[in-house]
Length: 240
Image (tube, rainbow, N blue to C red; front, side, top):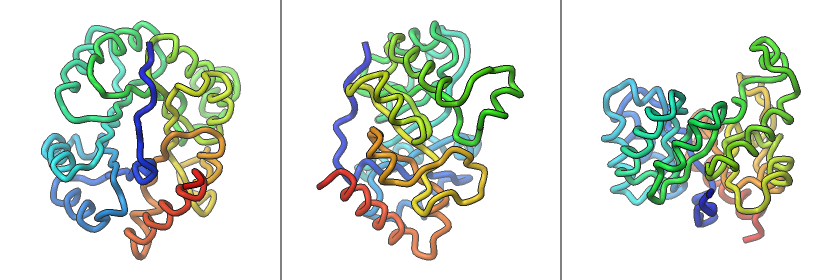
C-alpha cells in the first residue's frame, strides 16, 4: 500500500535540482541559496564524482530534505536491494522507473522506512514523437496516467511527472498519491530540452505536491532571490 504524501511545509515544496559535478560546487550552492531552499534533489551527475553520500550527509546535517534522483531500473531483486540499502540514509524521495510492475512491487515491499518512492512516468524532455520512436503508441498524457495507476497498484507512493499531466493523474489516483513535477519554468517555456513544462501556479493548481526547479534558479542573476520569488508564488498558489 502506498504511504500518504510527505508532510511538507510550504517552503519544502520547492525542490532545487543540485545538478553539479562535485561536493565543492554542491556546498557553494547550498550556501548561496541559504534559507530560500529547504529541499534538494541530487542526481546522476553528482553520483559520478564519488562524493554523492558526502553531499547527502551534509544536506541532512543542515536540516535539508533530500531527494535521491537516480531512477533505478533493474531486475526486481536488485532494485529491492538498492531501496533497502538506501533506506538507511535520511532520504525523503527516491525515484525508480515506472515501466515494470514486478520491479515496482519489489521496491515498495523493500521500502520499510519513511522514504517515499516516486515512479518516473515519462521524462519531461520527451514528447509524443519521442515515445513513438521508442515503439510506444499513445499520447504522453495517456501513458503517464497508465503508469501512475500501475505504480499505485504496485504500492509505490507517487510519481514524478510533468505538470501537464498533474490534473489527470490526480483525477485517476485520488488525493493520497504523491505527485512531484520537474521541469518547472516560472516564466513559461524556455526553449530548452524540457518539452513538457508548466509554470509554478498551474502545477499546484492541478494537484502537484512539490515541484523541481533547476536552471531557472541556477541561471538567474541572483539565484537566492529567484528561489525566494518561487517560494512566494508557491505560498500564493497554496493560499498560505
